[in-house]
Length: 372
Image (cartoon, rainbow, N blue to C red; front, side, top):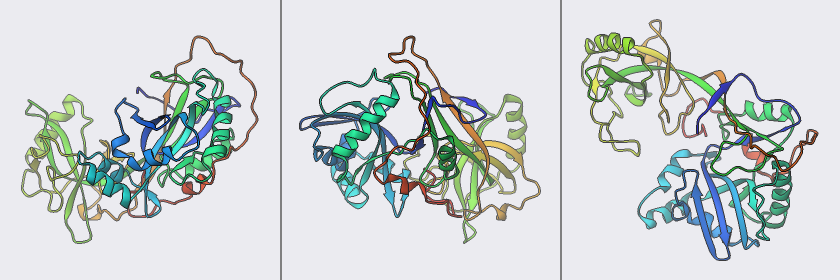
């Protein structure tokens, strides 16, 4: 999915807003006793989420196609790490994980109803009405399947956005007058918070097949004074790489990281994970990031500035991580023909069978398994 950044949430009566649950996107299909779960990349998910398969089989509806998000609650907060752990080759291990931390399927679209009628060509506002009727009929007693809230009120959307960083990743905005477009970018925006953190450079990697730096390895200290590897930054141009290579080659000195080091056993490890150069941890850099889960940045970060004014030991896992920017990624493709004319829909807050409560978790001081 390609993304384009804009400055603000779309406004007007033609938009529906929803919380952005940062889990695994999932399409759920049922035909009688047959259940199929599919990721957004088309990969099968049912073997990794047997608890959701059972929950879908317990619904009264014998036919359905639902679009939603798989999440796992751990002590009142969603854990992306627990979702990752489910992707295990051993069925016995998956069953044990499912028993320890059951998943929840948060649904936000109905693509085929229990009568087997396709709703793909119906505009979103009609699909939402159908989804709520489906939820009333099928989801009242379903503990593992919940209806995601939705609203046409910009004020409510902004309230959700302020909660981003707890159980929310941001806010989704969708055009009410457009049909569902499988495999295409429909009129949809995702609004996310970008934050900043001060980190210590504990090492670097050379670019593949090059003598220039490809990435800097970032660390944060724990309460015992150990420097743990938490992520990387690699958004450099060629001229910067030359200067950075000269700077950090001069600082090469083991051990670099004294706690968790690059290349240790984890689900992020690759063949190149163990190939890195340790440096004397003297340099502090401020970077932007979107998620911090499992005591590390989930994605690559971007450099904001070098912090010569800050001591490395001040960069700790327990520090407050500040929100600095709101970023909106836009995915828009307008179908050539719309099956229905645009209608003014006044602000309303759609029902969600009690799932709104999961939005109201504030962000704790210590970043750990919560930013999803």
